[in-house]
Image 1 (cartoon, rainbow, N blue to C red):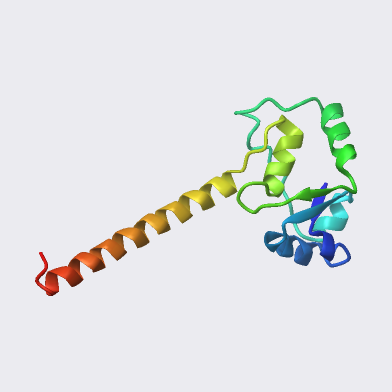
Image 2: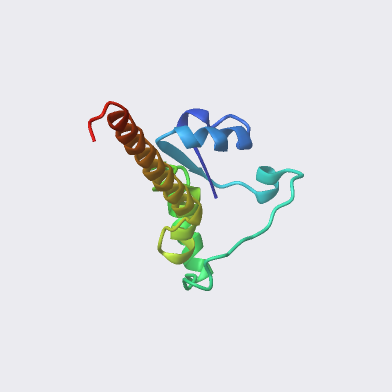
Length: 130
């Protein structure tokens, strides 16, 4: 299963996937793995199997087939392709990628705020206000 932005469905898969970062909608398509990866190497990564119990294969397939051709909401941090596949596999959409990005954004925001406050204090100190 792949998800592509609706307006870009006729483009090359890798370009289309990159464009999905900026789209709010994605189209669910069924494609052969070899057509998606081409000659690139790949690895099946069921990294959450230790934390979540996978649903039976038949149920995963049924859930996926229902979504083929459907347009779904896409959000890089809250509902990305990793959320999509983990929702199908485990019944819960999770994404370590998104969680790491959110943490990094929070850290950068906190650091920017701290530096901003430091600048205000230094300015006021230079002006003799403290």
